[in-house]
Image: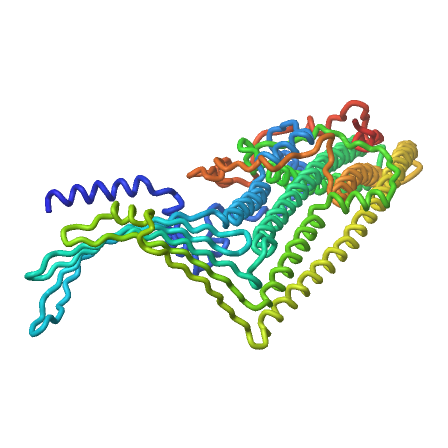
Length: 610
């Protein structure tokens, strides 16, 4: 017992060392199951704490100070430049949604290879050794007869593409018997057997027996189509996320510019009121403008944080935390160029490129093979069988050996045996096979209908995308004129207000109109880029100057990592009112960029980019 226990412990330790993480996954079922059954209230969740409500300010000056102080809490993170090419590259390399989609064709490929191996030969072997004692009656008494037998049977089984099988085996064996008072006798045999079975109707034919391979190949094609569709859609989503980030930055800067202008007007009116040359009503009016501008800035900041996070989620760069510590700043400007379209050719291009249409093509081919196989299944089962079996053996009172038996086999001392037979099976009524065949036909027709319906929808998507893109170009032209008109409108009202010819509310209206026009201009530029992305998606293409080869991008080592980093690992802990820290200051964000000069400057996002 002292010897066996260390050996047992060593064996268990070796098995534990060889176990993979996959082998241990099932052991954590109870651990994860303990999280079910109770739903935690938000007030009791970790990471949240109540704060005292903000008291109402005692004076209007305090209220304006608190409103303006909201901007000091902006926390959009440390800026980092980002271009569109980087977004596309990072999405392909890191996005786990793409990685998950790329696994499907690899799985289907292995299943296809497994189906292709169905005609590989199989080696078989058996070895038996037995000793049996049986009583036998001799004359007036029972005598124990002891028999020893030993046999070895190697063989091959080869499936044929025609549906039949060829079996070849060779049995070698010896049998010895002993009884009291009698000499031992031994018989050695050497017996090869060749057997062929071939169906003549049901299950016969190369096309039928290779049908499962064709179906597996079609499933591989469907999996590759689904993967290509997923990669295309994810890249388009990355494109859209980038342009929404671009719009969020533009909107924030426009609203900050609005705030700066409203604040300057307010300060100017306060100085005039203090000097006794103006009405306090103008101060109150511009205080409203400042409060509105601050609210817009806060809303734009929230939209920017979400837009930055959306791009990070698409890119999934390992060094980019999902919190607000890093603010991605887009550097690729919109390319505002008008296009002319040949709608018919674009639709035909979509028919050849769209992965979802290719998927229907593979489904249709698979359904056609299924119809053929179910048609074959309606035939009667008639199989022909043949076997040939020569026999070699020796018998001796002293000994019989396999070598002598094999020699006798080739010397032809014993005539070979043979067999020819026929098996037949005919279903009475054959209703099940007929029903399966009709179901396969209907399924194929259903796929044809779905494919044609999808072609109609693809045509609609392409034409809708063309119309949207053309309307977007018109919107760019109109918003550019709208901005110029709003600039003239504001400049004129500013001069009239300075002369005292109009109230401050009119100037506020002009300022709001200018800000809205600039936001609409930036929105039109971004929507035009998104419309181009949607047209690319509708035609089964991607934007950019080169295609994407995705078949070798599956990152197996990354997915097999024992302890992948958690999405929460880069987020700083501790309770705080807002995420992140540092980043662009209020002054840097409100500084006009090159070519801008105050509220009347045109938005650079609406000019033609590279």
